Length: 153
Image (cartoon, rainbow, N blue to C red; front, side, top):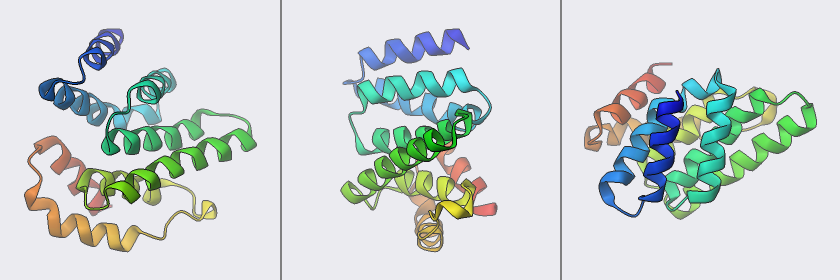
């Protein structure tokens, strides 16, 4: 894992280049589900994204990882604060770029996996419809698979 963290950190230094941007997204996609069970990985990615979020997709990933981080926090007040911070980042990214399929995917995955009492489920139906109707246009096989998986749940 340390090897990947070092590669990821190096890639952020060069994130102005398109290919590195793609590598960075690949890393985020690869580790999105892993962060649920890997506290250190989740924390490392959040720290990096807080410093280096240069796009709305990265802002949405920051928000998604922050909502995951809420699972790693013990204090109930900290859990809620962290979750709400993540939710706000996702919604900010959505406001800026509501037709971005990856941002919609991230919001849907958070809404489908968070506890109902948090009241963050208003967009599940619309996001599912959007993802289904736009899935064919996704060029990344990795992202396409992630979207297909969330649609099957």
